[in-house]
Each structure stands twice: as C-alpha cells, then as structure tokens.
Amino acid sequence: MGKDGHSERISLEALQNGDRVEFARLVETYSPLIYRLGLKMLQNPLDAEDVLQETFIKAYSHLEGFNGRSSLSTWLYRIAMNEALMLLRRKRPQTISVDEPWGDQEEERDPLQIVDWCCLPEQELLSAESRATLDRAIDNLPTALRVVFLLRDIEGLSTRETAEVLDLSQAAVKTRLSRARLRLREDLSTYFKSRLEG
Amino acid sequence: MRNSENCRQLLTSLSDYIDGTLEEQLCAKLERHMAGCEDCRIVVDTLRKTIYLYHASAQPTSVPADVRQRLYQRLDLEEFLDR
Image (cartoon, rainbow over all chains, first blue to last red; front, side, top):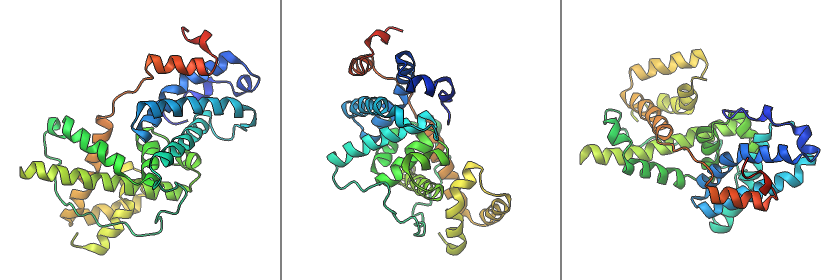
C-alpha cells in the first residue's frame, strides 16, 4: 500500500478472529491518515472526528466480510471517503456524486493564465497568503476532482488504489487528477500574476 | 494558447509527463513542441511548481489527544490508550 506501508504488519486473520490488540493496532496505525482525510474533505475538526469514529466503527462491524482483495488501508480509505461524502452532501446538498461521469470524455479547458511566476522567491511562493490561496483553490475544486486529487496527490495513493477507493476506472482517475492540477495551477497563476504586477 | 491544436494535445498528457509516467515517444514529442512554444513551457513549469507548492506547504497532521481519547472510548478500546 502506498506510502504508509503499514498493512503488511497488521494481521487480517487476527482481526477477523476478533483479536482486540490487533484491532487497537489498526486504529493506532491508520487513525492519523483517516483523520487527515476527514479534515481535508470537510475543513472542520468536528466533522473529521465524526468521519474518524464512523470509519472504525464500520470497519469493525464489517471486518468479517472483508475479503482482503484490496489492502486494509485502501479499504479503510474507501469507508472513510464514503462517510466524508455523506457528511458533505448533508452540508452542501449541491455536491455531486463522485461516480457521475463528470465530463471525463470532454476536452481539457485551455489554460487562461500564461504567466511565468516560477521566478518568484521561495518565501513569496510559500507565504501564508499563498498557502491560503492554495487551500481555497483545493476547497473550490468540484468534489469529483477534489477526491481524486486528495487521494493521489495529498495521501499519495497510486492510480490503481485511488480507482479502487472511488470505484472509478484508472483512466478516469488520471483525467480527473490532470484537471484538478490544471485548475489549481490556474488559480495560483491568477494570484501570483497580481503579485508580479503589484 | 497560440498553437492551439498541438497545445491541446499536450494538455492531455501533461500530468503523466510531470509524473514521469508518459511513454518515451510521447515525451520526446512533447519536449519538441515545448522547445518552440513558450506558452506551453510556462504551463508546464508553473504546473510543476504548483505540485511542488502543495507538497512543500503540507503540514503533518496528528490526531489530537482528546480526539484520540474519544475514539478509543467509542470503540471500547480504552485499555489501549496508554500503550
């Protein structure tokens, strides 16, 4: 599994036999990842805590049915993502479903901002204001793009793992990741353009 | 973007190119195009920088102690809290 590499150290057999020590190890190992995903998805610590608790409650009650075809972390991410999306739909009813086609067959939009801001000093690029601009840009991504972006580029899952978590094709994951990145570039370019001109 | 047909083709493979997963032949084609297209070079450079920025500005997240405590209580795992 991706960059955490913990799954091989947790015994699925022990978990499915009701070993509480092993379940506590599972919780300890994966709770930071699940909590971070909840925070990134919902931008709110209370909601992230809900996602965290519900994920492990559901994981515990469904362990018997887990067939081990995907890794434990992919499975947990899948449960957590479903929880987060459910909460998000409750809070933002206009949120579209991840499995909607979402224009995967459409052509890429042309970039509008052609400004070379790479030359800006590092302290300007990583200032609190530019970080806030980036956070807002990520939050403003359509959900169908944001979930792919968070799993691939923030959580470091592979294309295949992201496809498994979201029940999408790998081609759709690649398309959506590319669109998410280009939109973030566009927003950052707009911001840095004003810094260059100002 | 000026040379729009070629530039559009580039856009579809840009992410793979930056991740280093684009096949060699397409990579060479894209690099030939960028050598003569300033706009696309800027898009590639700023896209690469965008990816660098969100990785560089990522803060490590840990579960706050009170959140962890409530989680373990909810899961009936309090005995493991201090381990």
